[in-house]
Image (tube, rainbow, N blue to C red; front, side):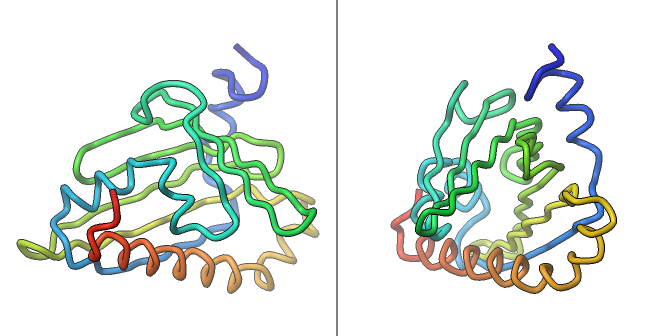
Length: 165
């Protein structure tokens, strides 16, 4: 398999890119519940603005293909990813392999107490546009960080309210 999402393409996409962004939140809930909410892929639409997420292939666990489509007005961004690691209740690893969004990502849960969990969302994107993309990244990074952080805060509220998973 060498086409989009094939073995060769997935290996290339799995290499960390130059665009790196991390967001963190503390959730007042046990790690097992937080992790289950993270694995509820279709429910990400509840906490990631303008985005619809679906499992394209598999059960949402290791080996599954996930598609997230973000649409704001007429602008649409399609994010294709493969789940490459599920270490319950600690870590979910994905590889984004679409045309625009490429690179590895990870969602980590760390139990801080009986009912408190830290969630870290970390992405290493390949920046399109070569040198121009690398030069633009410092301008784009704050918006990326803010977007991930706001989404995680919304996620935490939904989990704490018992609305996720």
